[in-house]
Length: 115
Length: 368
Image 1 (cartoon, each protein chain N blue to C red):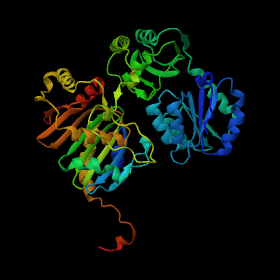
Image 2 (cartoon, each protein chain N blue to C red):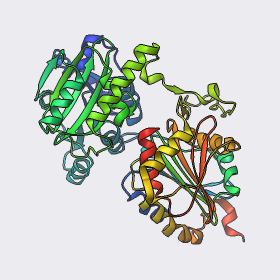
Image 3 (cartoon, one colour):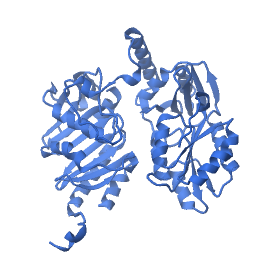
Image 4 (spheres, rainbow over the protein chains, first blue to last red):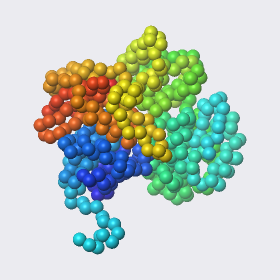
């Protein structure tokens, strides 16, 4: 997943990326350029409730632009500078979303030994 | 760790960032002899450095690369974006050419290799401080007058404006006479220029260069910004209005929408807000007018019933300390998309896939 996300970070103006599963688990987050240690899953409960019936959300704030796209296993969040090339970022999301489906989170602990 | 400084010392402050306590202690002692020229503040990591940058007018940052929490390169990356006017000197270990190349590419202006002498660092700092006003210093001229001169003379420069009356500082960037960007407090772009233009008893320092990585972030010309500044000043006089920095309204004060407060123990964040006094429907009409025939919007509606979407959007903004919400686009399916401008009530318009969303956002970013 890291390699796929690096494609997003290669677009100028991308400051953070978050990948969240449809059951609210954080699968990936890199928010260091935003000076954030990371979000907790409880932070996302309210925002995720909107995406039952929404495919895409694009928000322009004073400091950042936040783009959220649904993919079959969850959501890709991209936090960028307001003047970042959003069209390029949407394109990158369209490209990586189908590939993300093939990526499975690594199971931790003894659970990985059983089906 | 930061030392407390008197107001008169604040014009030339150097921030030194290193997690090596021994090195910091020896720098504190060694740099003491430069106190007539500059004072130093100290931080152990990039995060603490950013906290200091938020509240102090720093002239130069000197940073080590390897540090806990936030390393020097991450700090450099944030600084080139948020504080492009502040030069960064990177401390590297001897023989780290690749790191030096990376840091230079990321915007570092100078390097010192460990082990270094106090005077080597002191001289580098002095030479950069001199650059800060190599185009001269002006007192008693309004920032607006000097900006007009910069435009007319097609100057490439960095203008630092300091107000003794309010102890505030702002920076404006010009490239070939074009107003590119500005910074004042936590604001950037046009809003920062407007704040700078409101500074009284200004003290102006001119640097005859503008950092290469400064990007154009102001979509309108200087004349338009000057007119807007005059209008705001007139309004302030007429209404005895609050200063510019207080024009944002906490949503909870304006609307019945509520946002969950941060958890106890977490750092207090500035809540996402909507802009006071804007008329969302009017904003959408202005956007429509500016885009013209290239894009036809459907009927604009008052966004009653959209409170839930706006509340969640603000909650999303809160997670990243994003400032006020200007505009949103929401796609429910291939045939159902909407643009909205938040407010009380919000304005909503349905759009199709030909909607030039980025252009709409650029216009909203400018006028909201």
